[in-house]
Image (tube, rainbow, N blue to C red; front, top):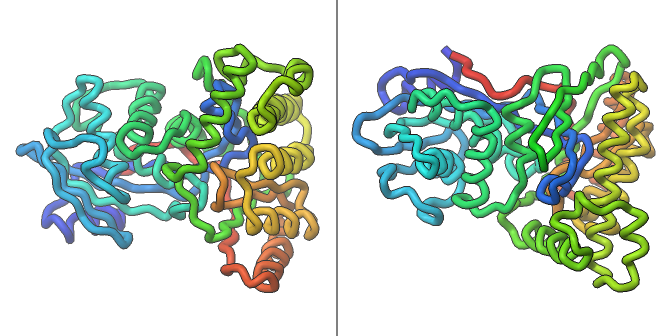
Length: 380
């Protein structure tokens, strides 16, 4: 019996119908491009949220977690944006989003267990949503394609939890495959898997969790999204996906300069995604992504202004210690950086980052290696 199932049985006094899990993700390249109809290239990681669940006959949702957090109990008929806060709104929001599509999910007893760090920019909320989506779809007898579950989970995040995200996080969690990255066109929603055999090249991805917590429902993320919408309006396009860099430069003089910088990041970041995926599919070594990662961080720091001193220091220290490339990952304003390093050099990079954080008086970061993990699945 899994630990999630055991915790469920201890709490509720009976065994769950099953356990479903979904991974967090690290975004290799393609930051703040998803809600601009752009391109992204994330990978699922081998840290997961697990949902042990069983159906109820009275239409009530009972939600509990092994992490610190108050349990919640609410009738499914009473679900509406704003009625719950904290961790439970991600589970309840998915139940609500199914209902918005006319899919009736019964009441459920749920126990959540997760080892995806919260507030680290690794999509802990999307992992919860996607694990719940599999459980709820099965309980409802709804044989929905994964792509539809992505949209259900996005609606839960946007409209119920109040975070104006794109489809990157949920797509990575639901559509990924072990040993691969996921190249996703956020306009067409077409995706394809790209091999990321890190071990064969003696490479690994280090995540550096700065312990500076971030949240997508804070004001900075929504403000950047509004900046992008303003830039698209000034440029006369539906989305920044439709702009190339040469046209943007020609329009610079007539634009609000903050909107111009935001657009320059998005346009150049889309180009970096296509470059990175093109290199990998052409058989170039994974370490060749290094300069693309470095360029992305500079753009996020200077043009999009979503980095912070801790993220900048993590990237600088990793590069100085021999990383092939490093950048902040996730929405920004805190969270994590990633570093592409050799397996042999991973420990020295970790020591270097920890040392400079101590010297700067920052909270000790958590540094750990991740492999491209499997997507959401039923575990038992």
